[in-house]
Image (cartoon, rainbow, N blue to C red; front, top):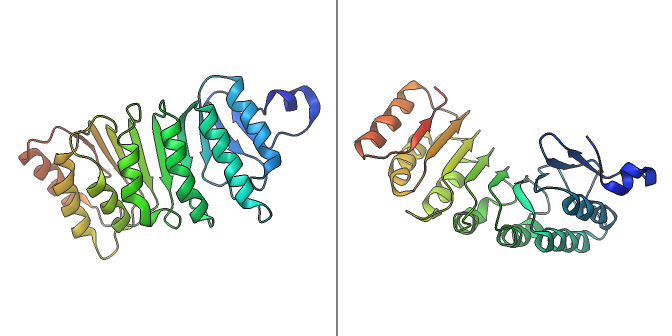
Length: 230
């Protein structure tokens, strides 16, 4: 793990960690502030395209609007991200306005992970529409959300469009609605141009529902490859 060039030269402790092997940038400081953004900009400018993991990166209480604007400016001006992970965050209004701009400003973005429920559950449709129209974005992951949010995303994904080819639904909460979630998969997946659908740790998805899904997609002549949790 390393930091930006200035910090590696002994000028201070970098607030960001860069995993050179995985090409992943994560926040080491307790929060995103204006003082951390110069370091992030340097990291993005220094090397090959990278994965920025903001899954646990809150804004500070003081000047959060300015910090959010600064982060959006860095990520839209640089345009070098190949993968982005955004996590559940108490500042959901800020993230909801920023994430669409960041996605659009990084046309080479190949993977997007939306983690957690609280900040984006009411704009899943908007984000799905934006993400699926990015020509390079191949992998879309929805993690630790409710089945309702997952079903909203599925229904909003444009049918038969270039873009996302691998959809990963990970740790989706289906308590009380596993049958409706299964029906949504059966209805929506054949409409999409997906090469692969991966389900991981889905509540209530035992062998019977996995078999039902596989048989239904086969009957619909759906060529999507299934990776199921059973």
